[in-house]
Image (cartoon, rainbow, N blue to C red; front, side):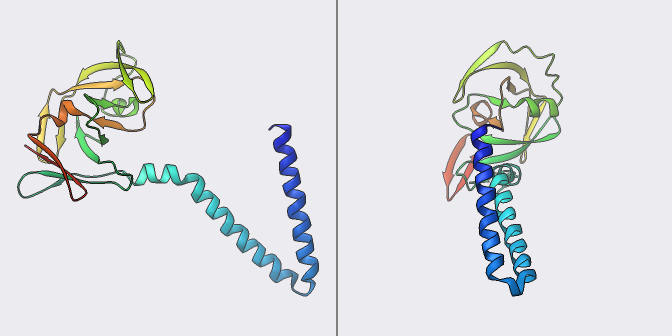
Length: 194
């Protein structure tokens, strides 16, 4: 910790001690009740701080799984997430992978974590390609998927890129989305038709 941070923490501790002491002195008859209320408010404050600090992880881990909805006409409907994006869980090589649907991505792009989950040996991959992303240029390895299933549709031998950089979510790009004859957005749903 830096000296400025320690000084700030010391100042806050002294301020809290002074305020707490003044409060307890003014409520001498009910010190036990005052301590109990201070403890309750402290726990509420700590809970709020924990939720605030973990909110990014909570929303990323629990708010993004979206199974495709197969409609009677055979179309696949994906609901819009609260962040405005479309997410889908597809079965890749027998393993469920969560994707961000990205019409701006040329390929299916797997994160390193997801690539390892479906059986790619990251040490054996040759990251000879590169891709321009919003985060700059990243190394890319190319391969093929054995299978990918989205709703009732099973495809085999689809090309895939494995991102050599850091990536939160795998991308379902146009090399796969282009297999659908029609892509439309209506009533907060992304609809894919073959």
